[in-house]
Image (cartoon, rainbow, N blue to C red; front, top):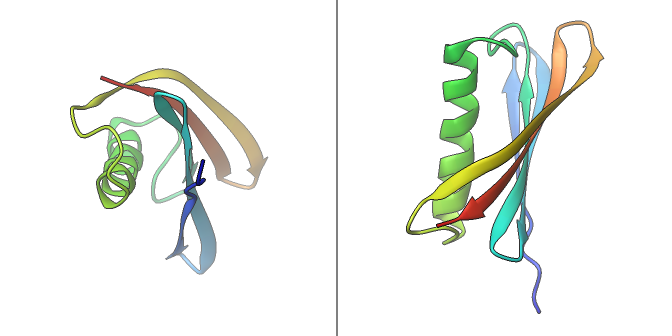
Length: 91
């Protein structure tokens, strides 16, 4: 089976931030980020991360009928930076 890995790098406030989409059987793993411009626990920050996720899903033809987030975890990296991990299942 061919593995698809979509990676996008964003330059935000002078720092590189990376999103990674990894397909899984029936779903995906997505790694996003949080920082001062997209805080970890705000509705606006979360909406931006979900928008990045949905763009990656569409670009890669994953979950065309929609998806459900089944797990979300955050890892503090330092300063105001976090990695945010999502596990999703396609509908």
